[in-house]
Amino acid sequence: MPQVVDFETVSTAGLESSPFPEALAGLRANEARYYKNKYGHDFAVVPASEATDTIDWVNRILADERDIVISGRPIEATSFEVDGTRMAYVFYESGLSINVMYGLAEGTKRAVGFKLSEGMEVPEELASRFKFARQKSKLAGTIRGSFFVIKGEY
Image (cartoon, rainbow, N blue to C red; front, side, top):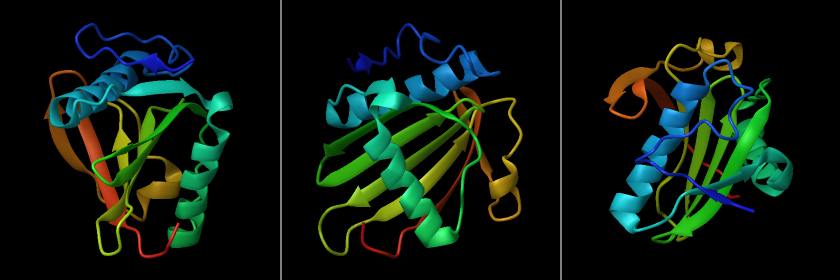
């Protein structure tokens, strides 16, 4: 059963195994607020065990595009379509969030984004490959993020 993320009352439900449950909950709520305000979409997540297709799709893109294998354990994920774009999010126990933005029409934007919860170290598999910019969030504190453009078809 999908859990709609409440960005007004931030909850750590489902994220308790993370060493940064509050920061990761804030990061998740930040994404939920964005989709609700921009698209009227309710951002809902499921446990990773119920989202293997989504996690496999994200892992395939990471491996094929940049030979990246994430060592962390996924704990939640979601996949949805909004405004002609397929979105997928995977939230990891480590505090990492990976999202895939995949425009369905030819020539539209396609990218993978990485966001780090406040307090977590940059994962080893990303540290030497990406520079992370900082942004402030009322819900998540300081978020560090990076991305790359997807070149292949998925």
